[in-house]
Each structure stands twice: as C-alpha cells, then as structure tokens.
Image 1 (cartoon, rainbow, N blue to C red):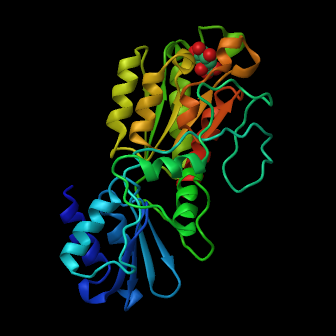
Image 2: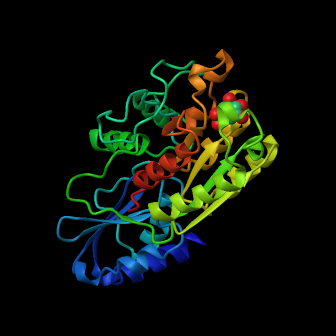
Length: 325
Ligand SMILES: O=C1C[C@@](O)(C(=O)O)C[C@@H](O)[C@@H]1O
C-alpha cells in the first residue's frame, strides 16, 4: 500500500490530526504523543498494512511499529499530512536494510538475557565471516548510503534493541499483529523424511512434519502457516523474497544448503524477517562440513538435534520473538 495512504489511516486511527500533540520517528516506530489517548484505536492501527505492533508509553504516548524499511517513508507522509514537525527536529535512522548477523547462543535452555536461546551443541561452530557486533553495525549505519543519523546513546540503544530482538522497555505494552503469518521452509531431501537415513532423521514422513508445523503454529498464535519444501536453491531464494510483506517470520531448515548457500543467506538478509534456523539432527556433532552454517548469520536462533520437535520449538520461539501469545 502507498505510504501516504498508510499515513492517512494511522492519523485516522489515532483520532485525527487534532489529537496529535507531537511526533517523532525511530528506526522502527512512529512515536506519537496524543492529546486524548482514549481516541487511539489499536485494532484499526493493527489492521493497517505494514503495522507490526502498537505500544503504549506513559499516559499519552503511542508507538506504531513498522520496521526499519518503511517507517521513515510513512513518517514523512505523516509529517506532510499533519504539518506537525518532529518533536526534536531530527530524523533518526534509515537505510540499514537488514538485521545484522546474530551471534548464536550455544547454551542450555537456561541461558540468560531475556532473548531467545539457541538449542545447539555446546561447541562453537565455524561461521564464515564471524559475527557483527552492534557497534560495527552502528558504525556502518553512519558511513553507508541512505543513512540519516545515529548519534545519541538513545539511538544506539534502539539500534541494539532492534538487532538484539530484545524485549521492549518496561512500561510498554506490546500488541502483536492480529494476523501473524508464518512461513516454514525446508530444503533438499526433507521431502524424503521417513525414507532417508531413519537413524538420523527418524521414521515420520514429510506429511507428518507439515501437520506438526501447522499445529505448533496455531498453538503459538500464528493465524496462518505455510510449509514449503524445495530441492532447488533458486526456488528457496524466490520463496524468501516473496515472503517480504506476506509473512511475519520464517522458520528455515535449508538442509544441505545450510552449509553452502550464500544466496539463501543473502535472501534472508534482504527481507530481514525474523528467522529461526532449524535442523533435525545435531549438525555440530556430525561431519565437519555440517558445522558451517551460512544462514545462521541471518537467524536470531538455531535449534538443532531435537528431531522434528525442533520445528515446534523454533515456531514457539519465533512467536515469542515477535510478541505473539
Ligand atoms: O539435509 C540435511 C538435514 C539437516 O538440515 C537436518 O535437518 O538435520 C542437516 C543437514 O546437514 C543435512 O544436509
């Protein structure tokens, strides 16, 4: 949908221009201060295309969460329509098209820190290129194209929060998208479940996995779940690209492409949807080449070695990550 139309719908849903006292924008959110917060219609806001959530701050503050790519366009249209200048006269941030690679936490499920944990072998995997720290990304944000400004502790904290997928600040009330859609992607030979190496991958067939994912998605609060499988790298890249704007998160088992595909990594980075990597087997305890995962660099968590049940965990963790439930 056109950003101007989205801005118009936002303005209507918060009670019209007359109800808006101040506005601002951060990397992911349109931040408004209202005159009468009771006029804010959360359901209408959540129904607007591109809106990922609504958060209330203090008595009169409301934040409409869009995500890093579209928020600034919507905000510009919003300012043009309302004529209300930004609160502090500055824009915040734009132009980082995707999340940075997240370090995978290789720890038991009691890992601390409030963010989803990886369920993986305890040994550190080899990862091509290494991790990007938030500091590196912040620096990149300053120097690369399309960037407006990242110059305060608050900006950096917000950037870290986005990269980290960490919990919202105390006092905020996360309200997830009313119709969250999940995409589960499976790579080559996963359609051979039940037949292929049952001692490693179990005896259940692919149809069983599809049903398991559908059930887990429903229970986790997703409104829809598509389970996709392909033996072809390009088809998986196409599917990931098509997910932009159509799905709220991805659970992916790239199978053998895990260990080889920069193209799938790049597609995941391009769409920047929250993603979980899942493997049926304990990849870190098998042949050396299975310890390399390219896609891991674009996923906030890896679940491995839990059999097909690992998909259910990945789906639950993704749901928690995007604020469902
Ligand atoms: O096909 C697969 C399946 C797999 O991704 C798993 O789910 O354990 C592990 C990969 O190494 C392998 O190529």
